[in-house]
Length: 110
Image (cartoon, rainbow, N blue to C red):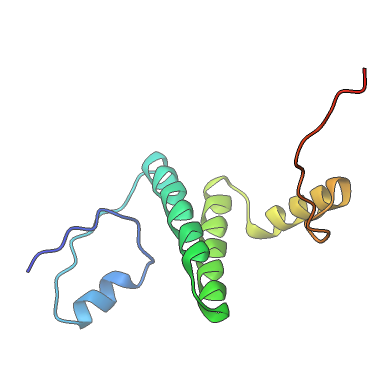
């Protein structure tokens, strides 16, 4: 039986497929295509976080999001530590989400 996936997968997935007695047909992506597929994967994994039913499932999906972010950072010639530093600087300047503030609307005072 043939299944079509057409999506970016983790490095060891083809090995796992072949250990299950199937043949994995793969190719290596060029940078521009890789970037596009990473963005698609980021959306896919974010959706999986949203739809996870348990804390453990959410943590596993967040780990997938983290791995995609790491890959995007490296594709941009950076690393996840630099992303973390940018996040810290932004948190100092604009805050985080600790206070759970929900902005409903603003009014002009003129």
